[in-house]
Length: 194
Image (cartoon, rainbow, N blue to C red):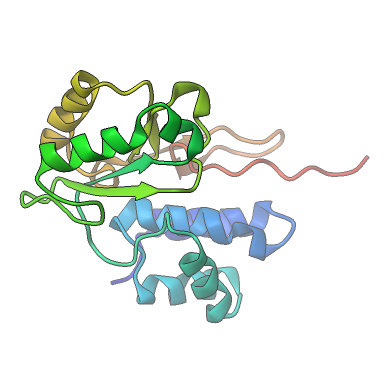
């Protein structure tokens, strides 16, 4: 399956904007995952072609980071942080509650395909809001059973994020025309020395 024209345009724009095409790998992977819901071997090869980089470099980057999915999973990705700060504020109980409520274990997907549940010992960076979980790459903090229930109820009816992402105009850098892009996927403008 080939990538959409909009996704290819974004990947090429990232390559143009960064000082090195290698710096555009992660934004390119995000763009593909936002389009397809996960990153296929074919899309890795296509990214390599568009960035003019060796396929092995794209593959090694995508396999290093756990945030890039390599197979279809639930429509929504829920990651419970069980790092020390969250652990001290009840993360293990939150994870157990989520498993009981969803009827699955961490690493599994609900039967209706709505939610894939994970836990991570790596800090997700919201220690001040512990215990927390990351839902489709957005934080839900200060979790209680009521908040968790409300999040799960919402996720059971919402489409997957990649199904609702629509290209929108990306604000132009001084002296450039507006471009199409995906919300939240715009790289920083390259700085030039004066």
